[in-house]
Image 1: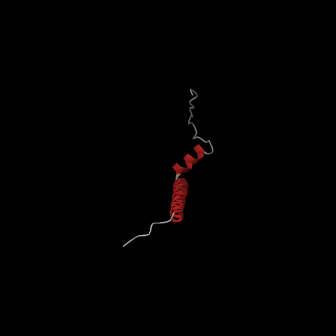
Image 2 (image 1 turned 120 degrees about the vertical axis):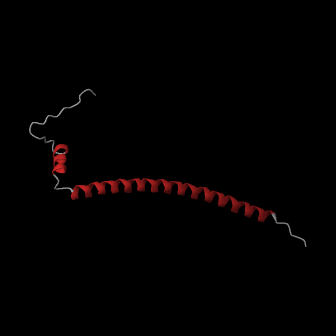
Image 3 (image 1 turned 180 degrees about the horizontal axis):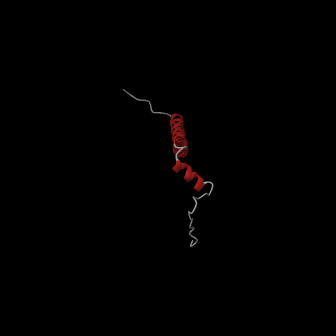
Length: 92
């Protein structure tokens, strides 16, 4: 059984297809890398929002606790109990 040799045109077409496939794979790999970076950034944002949501849920559940009210008064309003002294570190 004899095989016919491929013509030069056929070889050029096959080579062009291979080059096109390689270039497409490289472009696809770059898009995958960008998509993975975007996914990681979005996942970090989701994690931060979930933490914030958990903190807000805790604040809602314990809104009537005296200790939580005192912490909010100290941190956000700058209030102190009578006779309590606040010391500030100014050595920095």
